[in-house]
Image (cartoon, rainbow, N blue to C red):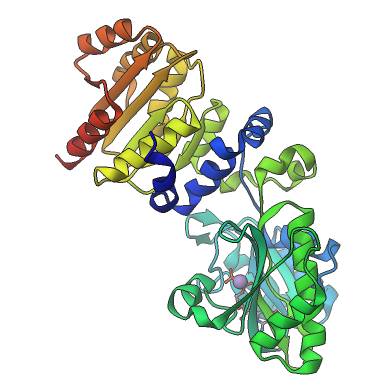
Length: 418
Ligand code: GDP
Ligand code: MN
């Protein structure tokens, strides 16, 4: 158990991170608060993010949401100039996927919108487009705000290499990204915004134009309890002015209890089917990239279990916390949810029975077996309340059972290699 805590920082990929950190043992209060609310993640559409930035004083160009080609045409006509029609989906890289196109006339806007609407962009169907007056771009900057775990501060990042994939810039040419950290008490100060601008090599009149974007973006992150807020590209236009041409905000659902307005921002399409099924069952589930499905009761145990899987050389396929007192039907539901993921080769149960009764869990597993969509090896470590009875039930069903968590993790990893 002891080795679990430091390891998890390095072994579990970022998506699990927020769950582990915010819902993990470090912040049990937030975890409990979040569980009282409905559990969902909140990645916002560009049009929604533009709205939030606008409310925080970021200069955002006008735009109109359209659900049909005719609406796009009307919007273009109302601007009376060339427009850009943009797919509203929650995945990035829309430009490269043909989801961002220029239209010179209302007629062209209608045609372009009908080509974009219904497109499949990385698995997401386009249901709506945003129509916005086309800007004459001279240069594209990147501006972002994140809650940085390493410095425990809100960090503002900017790069002159904007427009393109910022993750790629960070990986290949990190020196092109400049950063400043906001003081938790004082917030972000104007001189820090200027420091970013100087770091980008902006000229003095551009520095003045740049500052409101930085302070506005910081305000948006703070006010909306976002974990990420981005403007990419922040364009320098031909006339020297600047415009936020794209906006991305991810809010932290742990703050849902103090943001009733999140409910109106929610986008059901962002949830993977497995995540939705889990939420409806009241199970905490996060999909990861490995091949070992993990079922546990408790967030701390989840971390320890995932660390053990890593320690023995494999990777967890998910994080599924059934919570305390899980009954047989929930166990069965959890198993089916995990198997929605094709990558899962083995399922590892690590149950510490307190309020949860081992015999209930065992019964759930056995009951679920005939209903599973495909056969996979299941390794079960059961200790605690009613463990004898639980193991007897498992033995009768010929399931691999283990006593020590290391033993179970190792057995699961070995089974995944067969
Ligand atoms: P993303 O690819 O999903 O990040 O979508 P963006 O909104 O960032 O758009 C991709 C690219 O389209 C931008 O980097 C710009 O080069 C271009 N673009 C977006 N809006 C405009 C605009 O108003 N005018 C022009 N000319 N290009 C735009
Ligand atoms: Mn963009």
